[in-house]
Length: 342
Image (cartoon, rainbow, N blue to C red; front, top):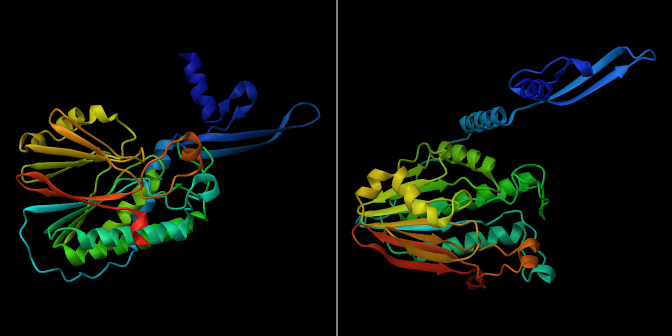
């Protein structure tokens, strides 16, 4: 117990045996302590550097995102299409785009940078939305890893692995917002109701927070749009007798998802007969029907990076729109590939 107590105190900058006598607040951890001694070994000066604890830092980020959203000019309502029946739901899945990744064709087989990402993302979704069946409701499922990095440092947030990145972080943010707004506006022109999901993921967890806050504020005056407001990384939606769920795929194994969603969304599960969960994360297609629920793992439209190419993880690039009927579950599917744009 005393060892744990001493360790906790040292993390906050208090350790008398080392002349550390200036602890930082409970919300912080000591980032560094520098002590200056004179010729007689007496302490003459000390500098203490502190940093926010992880939990406090996360709370500060959320507060910053909420404050930022207050200043965003609200988009005016967009005139909707001619009303159609509400039997169909079009789910447009966008996952693992990694805006900002830099891929060199000589090394990976395909080029990918900010300009290519913006052109490919917009072109594929424009083609997909225009080709989709007429449906009253659209669900834009941005399943995460939209941005390649999550801060000014081109590193993975959890492990700190160095990333091949094209451009400074503000440029990534600009491309992401610009493309997402165009996709949402195009969906609003085709569908009477649009739901937008910005899912939690491993490459851009903080960016997912401010994207949710920003788009909720941006479309605050648009009655036909809903931005999913949830910090829970598992998302469920009911469309009649069809249950459509979403998760990035980084926190739970695919075979564990049916029971997880049955528990987390038990009322929706009990009221439906067709159930599917859409995931990403692994960058390739995999679809398996379990007892009670199908797990549909989506590919990415992004080019593979050096890490994937060297690891031999090769897969077809694509994005999918899946249409669900209130009574009959999935009734159609549209697949677009980057090569269809040329």
